[in-house]
Image 1: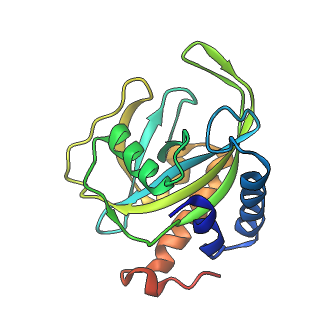
Image 2: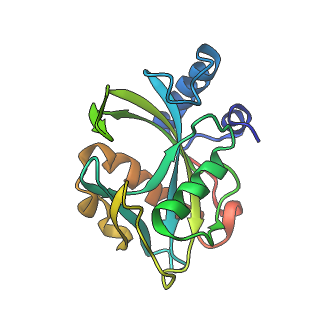
Length: 196
């Protein structure tokens, strides 16, 4: 399914998601290159909220560029199937390729401001990530490994400590929302999720 259709079918969880979906749909219409990093203002990314079967741990990676723990994910780089992008990024960044989808479609959306930084020696200006997050389950006993050029560690963190461990104020609202949505989903799959 292409990203525009996914977004049109998506049920926003709160006002933040309603406004961000409007912005994402606008960007898809306004910018022909919004699925690539060629757009210096905004572009699509796909992220992962990976939980264990007990739903009490979340998989985090230590991101070298920004020096903090957080979710995994990456740029669309021209692909419109963001679920496939998210799955690939999760495997590359954590070593976990056996991921069970826990939600049919996008689990969460958010527009995230990215501060300027250096990547592989090149300056990257501040810009906006139009992010679609997907929910997965993975076996916490599986072997983990990082991706040396992107992260320097991967670990399971207690769900109630994700914001403390991330230590990144800008992501606190997002991670809190993801945990609220995961709890609302319950153990019955999408049928237990009704949005707000």
